Amino acid sequence: MDASDYQSQFEQLINRNRGRLVGIARCYAGADVEDLLQEIFLQIWRSLPRFKQQASIDTWCVRIALNTGISWQRKARRRREKLRAEPADLNQVAGTSDGKNSPVLLDQFLQTLTDID
Image (cartoon, rainbow, N blue to C red; front, side):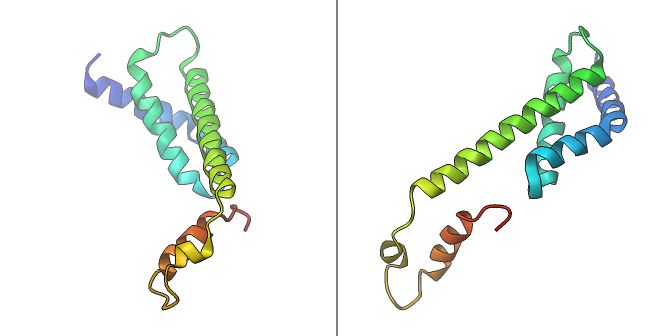
């Protein structure tokens, strides 16, 4: 199968399953739906040449989306846990009292917030 055949098959697959893929991205990504959806599309594109036709291609596509969503959620949880486990020493981050490092302090503070915050 050449590249144009893969592209055509990919486009048809995405168009048929777009609603399911968006739903999966919403469940696993929260506010980052578009980012996760792009990652799902990328994983499907990369995996398409290895599809062995042992199951329905639509089922296979949804399975890739679910696995990608689960990985996405795990990575996000690890990032949040790491930030919470290593609270910044405000005096060390701020450096001086003249406010020159305020953007660094603000950025570190924002990274500690959850999606709901």
